[in-house]
Image (tube, rainbow, N blue to C red):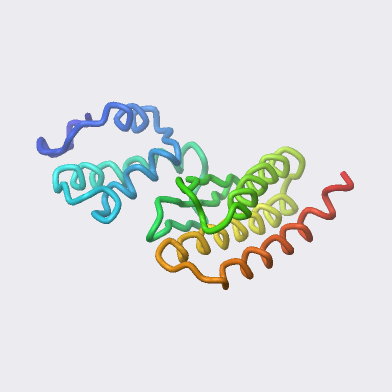
Length: 177
């Protein structure tokens, strides 16, 4: 642990190592982000204080390794998040459990697969535009899932169908490559 830490802070050697290396994963960011919220991790004040201590330090280490975060979505009802960095990286914390529909699971997986391909094939502004579209789709999918975590309704099915249609249009030009 760093010497500037409060003696009451619980140590997390993996987090300390990431901070020392100046390279944190988005999974670590998600762990400490959601660990600070009582609805997700209970009301353990010592643990929440530790996560509050680690969050900005891990965020700096993440941004050092992956680029500055330009856009982000952290869900409110499910433990899921997505960020887009200025290095055109998309990082996702996939929600656990059953979602509103199996289609959302499939579309999340397709988006991640597509972003890996795009990152390898395109450069410059072309890559940035497609990565922003993929990020927008991911945020829409996570928002639908998050919205339906408490309330199930048929509107979610309509939104999923609409996102599938947009995804197909996005993929069409690149299927020819």
